[in-house]
Length: 224
Ligand code: ATP
Image (cartoon, rainbow, N blue to C red; front, top):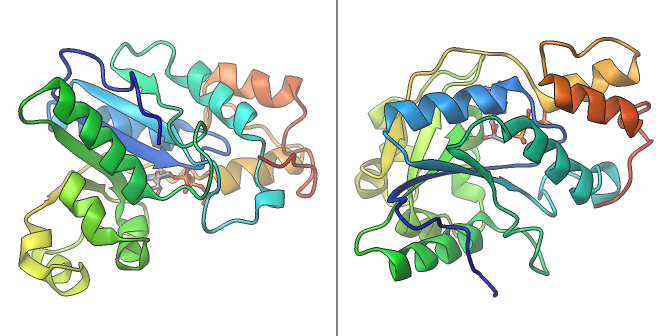
């Protein structure tokens, strides 16, 4: 796997926000910013997935469009970067491969790299069934944020649901964030219904969606 240049020299505490970003919305940006602040992160890498495991390839917007929208959305935050690591490699997009590759790169740069994979409490519920969750936890800590409908997990829940029990639970940082109920599926639905997504996505992303006629109808998606 080719990995180069994702970790900037001088960054030692790095957040990794993986997602489909179809499209990126203010919910993503808010959790990234608030986790960055709470955990004193130097940088947050936004990592669009090439092949999201939970959605059919034919039902996902082209990777180029999703990455372009991420780049537009984060352009005004110097601590945010687009990381194309999953888009530039072949094969399935496994978080375990991504964080291991980033940890390897960070280790080459620094003595003790600290990576924090950011995910919501809703996503954490399925974490044990991800590909090689032990390897994910070996490469990074988890920064878990609440998502409306799914509060932050208690320590006992972490110990009983994460592979690795108490040892794994020690690798989790729960971060209280301001709840925003935005979802990408909600944005897609509204656009397909001809409804406004102003104040749900950044203006530049709204313009991109409009200019590229994305999400105009549920089946009108290009494959990644
Ligand atoms: P979809 O609605 O298509 O499932 P999504 O809005 O969940 O998409 P993803 O790109 O799949 O967007 O999300 C990436 C990560 O961000 C996941 O961990 C997801 O749970 C989290 N996330 C997305 N929106 C929010 C939100 N409003 N609050 C907290 N976490 C969120």
